Image 1: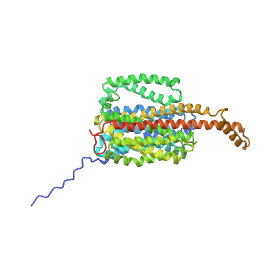
Image 2: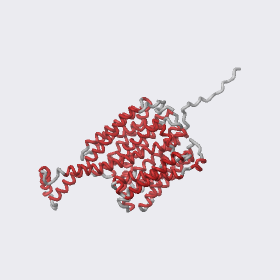
Image 3: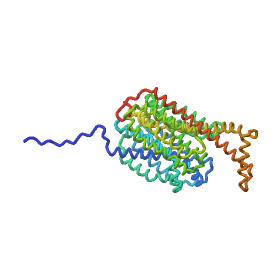
Image 4: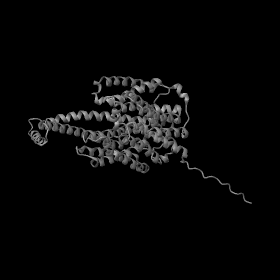
Length: 526
């Protein structure tokens, strides 16, 4: 009798991913989404928080600034902590701590408590962001990057874009407390899933004995004070303000200590050797510029609609949701294209599309509303995804696994620093160009100007028909308001032109970088 054949289970394909790891990664992505969303979720609701905490107008911006400063310190530190503690321990601790700090922020009864809780929230939550980027390029085979890279790119760009919209809806529908309470249940689920499912790596507790405390102090002083100087400088005439000047001095000293320890410590807090990889260096540069565009326009559009159009947070959110939709629908297209075409061509299309959107905004008028902003917002959203996916792949797709954790922190830091530098430059240009345009326009609206006097007389006659008004004073006030509004509009147009030149230049600059080695899945070759 012939022997009966033994049934053999079919071999799993080389790129097979266990369901456990896929679920763990999705939980990590959601945690990153919460951490990035919380940067901007309070921005549209600061007035409600200010009223609830009886805070002054000088104190309330710290609700956002404290989060940003703390987060920018943790992001590069997370690489070392991940190697020492393991991704499982770091991410679970970060998710649980972020959740607890969110609950505490909702219970704050004064501005001091809120600032402390937001700093804790930003510092601990910052550990989640680089862990996701590192995991994406460590646990997934290259063939899966056409799916994974658009996913993390979408979260990194969509979350800050829709933050003001989500925050406006929540604070209007319930109260500002729910801006933080909404994190609690998802945060508990993410922390539980992370502890139960993450098994990507093992801890190396021996690194604790080599922990560079001086490097940490230097980095915290350098990055934290840099963030403060960039946030507060434009509004306080830079170094003329004593607090900004003091932080600039501390930043310089911290920078010297930090870079000294980076190059001399046995196990530096941040390993800068990743920049020796040309793809990573270029990817980080482009990430820096994407940060300028991402956070710059997330700031500019609401300021225009609030200052010129008089919109409240709810109306601003309704007017700006288009960018988020465009990002969402472009993400899968970007994933497919990353397999089909040269990544440099994708980036060029993205940069040129972004420049086209900002150039469109240089024709701004005081009457622009949802429909006039529609095309620029679609261009912004689509172009951002077309840039982000190839940048992620070029920067992180060619690094060896042992360098990914540190490199991921550096890569995410460049995007945040780009946003901070971009906002500082944008604010400075808005303030300076507003003053310039107001001075130039005022020259044409003086008593010696026949056109100005005719306009004033016509407005005075109109106001004379309204009982109870001093017609002349009302006309002068109205005319002055028109000059202020036009000066503000011209300063917005100058900023949009500046961004147009920046992104158009980068679209041209892409031609000069080396063609990345192509892999299946759109990443770079190893």
